[in-house]
Length: 466
Ligand code: PFF
Image (cartoon, rainbow, N blue to C red; front, top):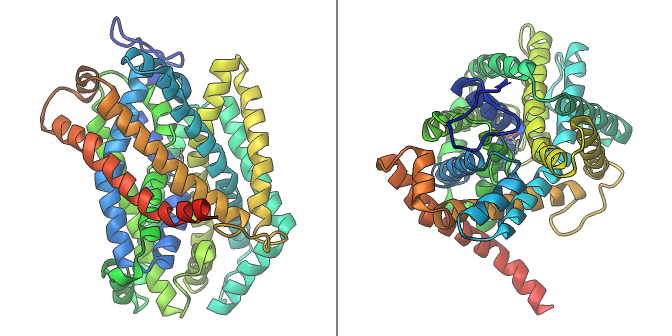
């Protein structure tokens, strides 16, 4: 995927070369963006946060915050051409500020590790559901039986931990070998195949008789159901689903050729990612209402609704198998992106081989992930702050680390970097550049700050008061 083109004379080059084409970059970023966040997480948090109003806020966050942050991350990555920690340190100095900006990169590495620790647990579930589908487990089951099957699966700690282990092993294996051509090919096939299969499921949802109810739930805003906490979750999800706020896209941007338009590439990825998430909602919610399920049932939502739909379709076992294989692939390509910043850093900073670095990072994440794996069964009753261990890791990474990371990254691109540097990366001083600059300097940071302050105020108050 990466070829060793030299970039423009006098410019920095990446140790690892550059992407072979604009398409290769777009595919890699799309592979990282489209994952469990779109199909598993988006529908369940929409369900937990009351539907329409949440979706609207999420869409505003994607456009007003997601898009400028993604452009900022790519431009910083391309200018620095190193791992996120080294890039932030280098540019911090070069732009006349301080090397301490490296801590933003470090926070991103930490966020990637935390996210992957629970992401891998759910990635493991998708693997188990491939096997279940092949075995035809869901054929003819009703809603209660599918829910009972899912809950029995979750309470089997050995099974959940084993699936997490296999998924982490798969991820470590690919990262250790380096991101090779195979991955680009996989993504090239994966995204269209996933969309095609989702269209089949959409037809099923449309025929369920409850499509209108699903659409109403997703697009009619009832503002009374949305709290500031919900707004923070929408913001966190916009960042999570686009893989931004933690340096993964910065790492990919380091390999982007000089001549590729950052704005164009970002727009393609943002649109593709959003369409897939909305499609997932339009499939899931009609099935939820048609079967009297609870839209607010949490992480198990997709694992209960889709098997139910497949169980009542002609050729359901086949479609179900293909679907969960695609979902597992989508999760896999995202997991690789989550691990890349930590591995790239270990390789560059401590001169480890890629395999050594991948094994250490993978091993540490596997241990951390056991906490999340067990919080669905033996550690279910260990509850503090946001809930179980899984809930806390999820909350801390998506709702605190990603927004803070995104805030600092845009402040850096908008305020610390000089106008010439950013204009050069974003292709001159046209309308798009001006729009990006206004968003990155004012709208995005102020938006993130308002949401963070409003949600954290009660918690800070409690801390200070006690
Ligand atoms: N964007 C991925 C998803 O929606 O599933 C999650 C993710 C992948 C976040 C890679 C961050 C990242 F670096």
